[in-house]
Length: 569
Image (cartoon, rainbow, N blue to C red; front, side):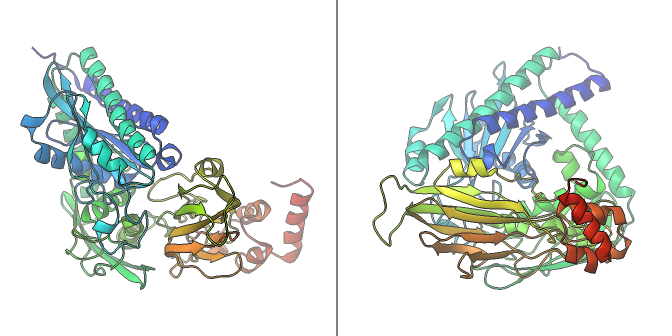
């Protein structure tokens, strides 16, 4: 007979389960082959009940992965079938519509058995550097061009890995050891979660997870509904324009705060793009839910029940609800703008709550290096794929400055130069904060970055740009000014596009300036001491200190002299 537990015991178990999935995520960070996982944390991990409902997610990871993955396990249960699930099984997919939005994300699901009885599932996702096809970028005209598709299937049955699947994967990607290594790392991190779960069940004498699942979901649902029902029941619309690929795109949303739910309707958003910046609805939903939870119920743990009251609808064949076989490789570009769009509407209902716009999407690029072709290459030149994640600035908040070079909403970390250069013959000649890129305001927007990228002697490369905010900077709020725009060019002045694969000849560099976050509030209201600090730290130039914030020339000279002489930091 199962042991009876108190609410206090269930709360302890809930916290324990969250620590279990965090250990699961950290195991993936330690064992993954791809720098996108090891260095940037582009992953997710979670535990689910036997119905496929997410009970806990790891703190380490991205909302795009984990909130999309919240829906994925139910697809695995349906596709595999409970009668075909055995102890030692591991399931896999990179289906954009039943996984997390594009082919470059591998999702692994493992059933968890105790005493020969299925008690739940563990799932994890990782962004892999290469999945074949055209490579990571927006150039494809359909999902078929974007890489190898792995339907929901068994990676392993009863502990035996499918060797045929491994051979197919190895035969279709540029970095086979890296990708197969990541697949094994994903499976291993689920196994870590399973072991810790069984330890917990043994300790608390649990036969199954039904009671703890009910406790988690009921309390999460009640707490979320209390937050929603405390809000004014109003409607508001938001709109923003971003670069797109060949032409700007318009994003629109109408928020309706109602009893027991918030409805987000993306009617009026631009249609499908011909290139791979389209976003499956599952990914749009992930970032829309995340934005609302951050603003309304940030302290409530993420799980099936705390996400359920946030309902998202979008017309099919819009850029936020792209059906198969639309190209979706860079779905994150549109998806990462969804929170700023949602906040444009929410600010009209809950003023002084949400931040100004930030850089939005990650400032990613991939470098495909090869021996130079304009003349014979020296010995030792190689082919290599190097992916690096970088960030612009986040938007200023109602009571604080924006964060420098910090990714919101993704939370993905900026990759260290050393880790990037270790993966291939690429050289990062410069990487530093970009002064004056944060929009002026009572609270300043976060700074973007400068980067200069080249290759070692004897190599040329294709540069796959994945940027936005080239033409449409982050917009300020409540009188705050816009953030700085993105710029990209070769070091000889040759202009480059914000998106797409572009050839860079031997000896040339790519010069990048990543966007800053926008300001919040009137710059005239900024605390003078904060302006002094910004100038002393090099966050703003003397010209900006004078023109944006009204500092007098004499004071500017005193501050700069103090910095020069080591009196100010």
